[in-house]
Length: 426
Image (cartoon, rainbow, N blue to C red; front, top):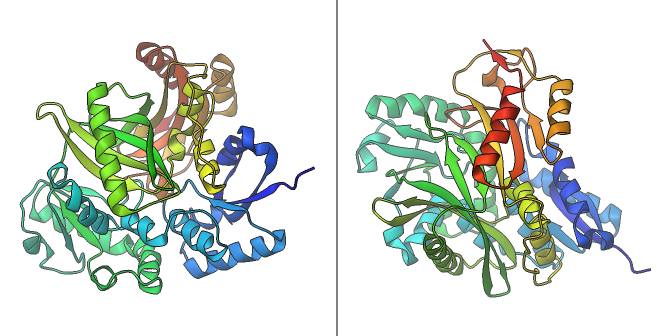
């Protein structure tokens, strides 16, 4: 019997482990944690050296490593190329990954090839009391950390007073991500114009329209686009209401997004990696604007791909790490359409009541394909939700993933589920 391949996962958790185990390739693989999920999420501090030491210890204990993967944002995304280089494994270069993760650097690269599809942008130091006057354009505009995730510490600025009001929150919390990110920049020989930056935030002019995400991968020099996912916002704020697949955008628009993605990914130089690129399509102007580039697959889309294709796009990530050309995704799923819903609350408060296991169990019996994850418990303050469960405008009470025959049926099923969940926030 052939020896199983040791596939080390940065951020291994139960949800993604189950997705990996269902892949056809799982029979020849052992999925092992290089870094555990609870070591990089919901932690007080992120130490890159400690995480790398933990990964090395586990790899040495296993005796061999054949591949390394991650579906997580920073630090998961940057640990993969560091580990891959050390053990001579397939994977992207660290610099190409950092050109995606460092959002200002990414904008500089994008500007070289698609300047007409971008907003204006300017970095600034959040601890500079004159930062507002140095930005060079007027509100409304967005401010964002050069490195963040889930829109954490991102704000749409109304005026000068609002800018400095938001900076109070930024100054208190920005080091959580900026310190470990700065460690990578300084210790791994990034270019001087990047490593010498004092700015930890950047501002950019608003872009608007219908939001969606292009999923793709690079195998050697070949850039392949395999799916487009719609991101649908809440009506009352910029928070997401759901991701929906496949996209309902016109095919011509999807094609243009795919071409823009190829140009940007080629410029950044990422290879042997999955990626996703987020866009806005402004229908009135018939124009596409690039929001950001991520050097990984999106785990939030995995169940939707299973529902529609019969298999998760974890398969693409895994085959790239094993130095194999991924197979095309066939439409062999049980549903024509699927969505990942984010049931949100929009005001702070205390959770007076949360759904019971009996409630969620009854709903799962009714909709067997549904995955539901309630993120709150009775007595919890919404302000105390873990950072990866909230953006600056909402609190996610539950994630709900469902499939259907069409969009109308999908929304009917979702509304039925919401009606069956007893949340009470006071």
